[in-house]
Image (cartoon, rainbow, N blue to C red):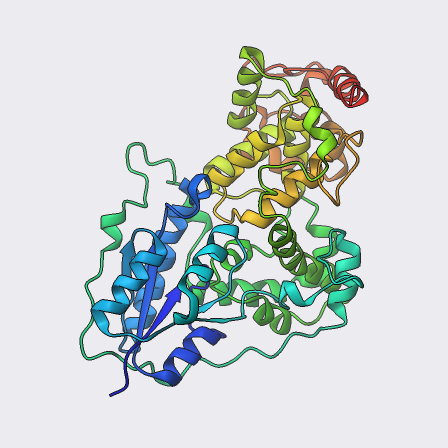
Length: 454
C-alpha cells in the first residue's frame, strides 16, 4: 500500500470540485485534516459567529466523509507544527491543499515547503494570473473585471473521486465538542440556525434556489425587505461550494446575471488586493488618511456602543445592526449604510467597524471585510471619496425598507410607512425607541470639516 497523503482543509470544506482531494485520492490513502490554528492569524483568528458556523460545517463534512468510508481528523494548534506531527505519526509523505491568500496562510504554505502541493479551486481565476499591463495586481475593480472576463468562463467543476482510500491506521482526532466553538453562557447564536444550515448539501440547495430568481437580482438585491440576495456568502466563504460551481450552475438572467457574477468576482479582486497589500485590514490604502482626526474618548465609545447594539435612532441603521447580531449576517445594501454611518456620521475609525463585523459575521472574509470597509470609508485604493456621505434616511425610503425595519426594530411596528424611515422628524417616535444620536446635517458638516483638515 502506498504511503498515506494528507488533505489539509481550510476554507474549502467540500467534496465536489475539490482539486486537492482529487489529487490526494489519486496519490494514495487520504487523511483529511482540519487544523484549528488561532496562533497564525493572531488578531484575525476567527470571530465568534464564524466559529458557530465552522462547528456545523465541520460536522456536515465529517458526516459526508464517513458515508464514503473516510474520516475527518481534527487537530488544534499552529498549523505547520500540527501538520508535521500528523505526517510523522502516519508516515504521510505529502500534503495537498487548496491555495489561500490570507497573509498568515501564505506564511504557513511557505513554511511547509516541498511537503505541500497547492491546488487552485477557491477562485474564478488565480488572482496572480489577473494582472495589469505592467504585471502588477489590479487596485481598481472595474479594470480587474475587464481583465478577468477575458479568462472566463472558468473551467468546468471537477467530479468528486469515486473512492477515497483510507489509511491502515487513523491518527487520533479531537472532537468538535473539545473545541467549544458554540457559545453557551450566554448563547447569543440562538437565532442563527433559523437562517443558516451549514454543509455542502445546503450550499448546493441554496445555489439551485437562487438560480430560479437571479433574473430579478439587479433590482431585488438592493431591497432589504425582499429576499433578493443569493444567501451564498457563508457557503462561498467556507468553501462548501466553489465560485466556478456557482458560475456554471447560475447561468441565465441577462443583465442581472452579469451583476451577480461581478459580485462573485469581487472575492477574487479582494484576494488580489490583500496579496499585494497584506496589511490592508489595518493600514489605510491612502496614507494621507493616517492624519484624519477620528473621534475617540468617552462620547465616541458611547456612540460606538449605540451603533453596535442598534440604538442610534436611525431605523435603517438599527435594523441592520440588530439583524447582524441576531443572524450573523446583514443585507449588503444595509452593510454599506451602517458602515457609512459609523465612519461619516459618527466619525469613528473604520477599523472599529471592521473588527465588529469580523466578530459578528458568519461570512467574514479577510479580503472582503478590509476592502469593503476601506471602500466605504474613502481610505482605500479603489473607494468612494470620503466626502460622499450616504444619507441613511433617504436610502431607507429609496429602497423601501419599511418591512425590513418592522422586522428588526419592533418598537416601530406600529409606525406608518410614510413615517417609519424617520419617525422623529414625523413627530411619531415611540418612547421606547431612542432619539437620533446626531442629526444628519450636523454629522455631515463635522465629517467634511475633519476631511478638510487633511
